[in-house]
Length: 67
Image (cartoon, rainbow, N blue to C red; front, side, top):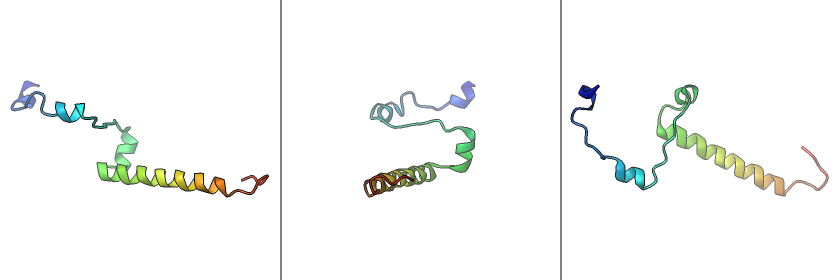
């Protein structure tokens, strides 16, 4: 195990961590579908946009009309 850590720098990412880096652990099936940060961010931004569209559409529903 020590061989894997040889040459590492203690605290190398500590400042970035303290600055509020958001790290999440993806479940294996999600990681398979979204293999990198760009793919995850694009998917999440789409979800945010869909939520916004849904909320805006709710404002235009005719009173008494249901989905």
